[in-house]
Image 1 (tube, rainbow, N blue to C red):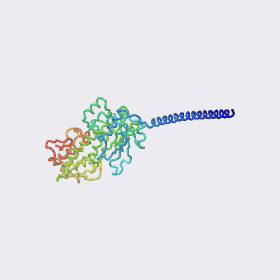
Image 2 (tube, helix red, strand yellow; image 1 turned 135 degrees about the vertical axis):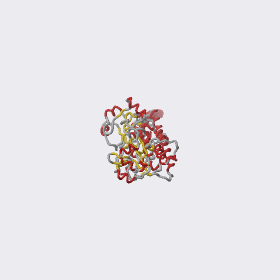
Image 3 (cartoon, rainbow, N blue to C red; image 1 turned 90 degrees about the vertical axis):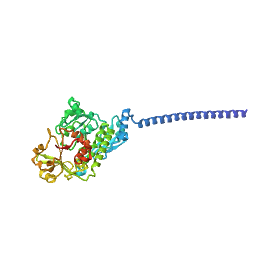
Image 4 (spheres, rainbow, N blue to C red; image 1 turned 180 degrees about the vertical axis):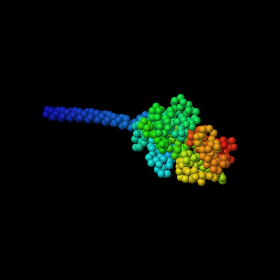
Length: 426
């Protein structure tokens, strides 16, 4: 009996222990399952959070198309001759444009540079805000409305068939473009006045996104600055080589979304210019030429390093003003006569009402008749009242070059060529 009681007690203890073990296993299993689910949930939550943080904002189809157009190899802007601007490409079609004086080495005439970040319209600020260095002004492109302050700037828009992007200009003096004149007449293209007399109300009504300016001109820009409209310097007129000035059509092209067309247009201009230049570079006879007229007691002529002087040289002639001036210079008559009295040709550009003649030239200054070029009827002339000179010439140095080659070396061009801008004065 005693042994049976002992066995029962042992069996009970064993059963109790077994139950405890099962309870512990069940508890551990519950804890394990609970922990796995908690950890999984935590990992899932963290993953979703990180994914949300790292997901870039969606780019619309229109913006994606703009970016593709900007980054197309045929649309990449890389100036070759122009020294006044450079372009750096970042991601998503973002470009950093630096503008500096092309003549900075000639005395640092514009010590301050200008910096713009061109951002495709529709691109979320969270994408580009961290990419833009300090000091850059953001411009959303392509712009739809702008103002051209000079005829040189206007020539860029004309060459790019982009008159529709202009909301205002300064004036219509010496303009021939029928489309521009019609737009001014019907009021779709405003006139804002001249330098120093800009009409701020008209500018605001034109509602431009940016305004192209020439910071070296006489002024009047303080009033424009007060409007808060972004002012973008255009320094094409300070370029020292003809193709450098013409290459600023690429600069305009970046702002209005015509990069590819600008590249194609300039490539043709460059080809034409270099082909014409090659015709004249081996000529043995190099005639001499000078330029300008008397105005207010002084003779105004382009300097020896001006881009026009370079065109004379490329046309196979020798320009007699050999100084280092890059713009225009005022010279006393006695000095210009001492230098140029025996010159073969005399180039004149002016705005004359009616038909200019040798008689009119002598009447304006009797001493003009003393030059050999006058006596031998070798005056090269362009009347801005009769020719769209500033609408075309700045972006077509190839046409200017051909005009001068046709005069200096007529045997090098077709006999029927009559000249686009310049002809020998009759």
